[in-house]
Length: 337
Image (cartoon, rainbow, N blue to C red):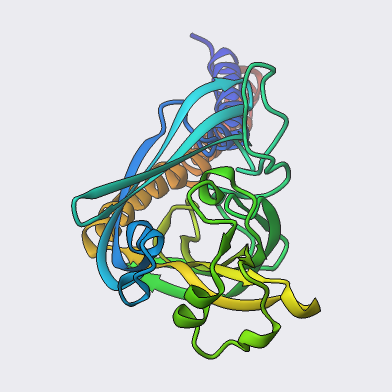
């Protein structure tokens, strides 16, 4: 094989390697950050609850109507039920275990698989109105600013997400985001078991600090959702390695011409347990390694090999130019004679 043909093959190989590096970096790597169509993740939380005892309430037993500091565990399952191009239909189910009771709550979202924001749903899907807002997950390489919004299903409202800095969880660098919600409850599943009114004497026993003179009998009730969520989100993959949730539903009344808070009818405070934190951190580490290989290591290796091939071509060309031609050798021989 001639020197020129060999050099041409090496140049072509180098070009192919550079093109392949571009495909890996700008096609395969971004594709790897999309929400997978087989996403199915369960996270466990633990904490305490304050709950209204409906049976005691109906019987007028004010002393036992509110149960406080009840230990709870919470299982949260987030899984994709279907994908439609860049859109995923995702089901987010929260099951609270209180004593012998299991209290499930399930919401369905249509989200963009890249940004993780709510988007236009497939025509057949009934989903929460979360368009433009985060609901169940953060995107990879989440921004370190206040540009995100969050959809709260209890109040069906969209609220700002506040970036508060960085931290470390289970050996991973995380961004910290705080979400605060305070709005009227709109979720029918939350409102359905709550009484629309209570006898005045029962309200004054449940909330002894209230001015009874300003209250009608019965007292009409409305409900307000108040939540604070703090998420510790892996900087590279968007996995929420740790999260704390403080969620209340507060009974209010508009008697007397202004809204007055009476009492919390439910309050839940829980956080991801250490075992789940470790599992989430391990998943983030595995996904982060894959992203690093696709976005950085593999393209650099391919470009490096291409550079070596081009260097070989260059050195072979220099060597060929430096070597004397047959005519030059003949002339040199004649001069020597």
